[in-house]
Amino acid sequence: MAAPKVVVGRGSDEGKESGANLNRATWRLLWWAGLLLLAAGLVDVGLALYPAAFAQPSWRFTAFASVANGLPLPAVGILTATMAAAATRRPGLVRFAFGLNLIAVLGVAILVVGFVSGIEAAFQAAAPEVYLGLQKAVFKTILFSVAFGLAFVVSAIVVARSLRA
Image (cartoon, rainbow, N blue to C red):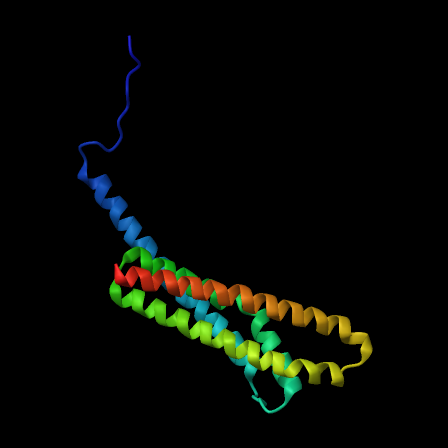
């Protein structure tokens, strides 16, 4: 004698419809959560760059190191919004996410150039006792810039391919 089988949800359209709406709602929520994280990260970037003194190499070093230190928050926001846009396959959202990734790649490139141009001045202005801290800042800034820059490039490529399909 075979064991009885329990089938859940068969014959009921209500369960299927609820699952589809939940999926759509979840991706919409992730889209907005990503944009919220991006906005919070942009506040950090703005605070790191204010007041601006781009002509001073030591300012560029500290400001851009601070921006790089805060990169995880807007990066997670952009990448989350990009995943949500790609999952919904809404062309407008996908194009917007693609634009966000391109702007992020450009921003990281500017960050690296500005930061590297201030390294020598920062070391010259600092006492030898703080060199280790400066070296750590250089390592972390370059690491974060490369890692998140690559993440944005890969994300932009994936989104561009999905736009072609």
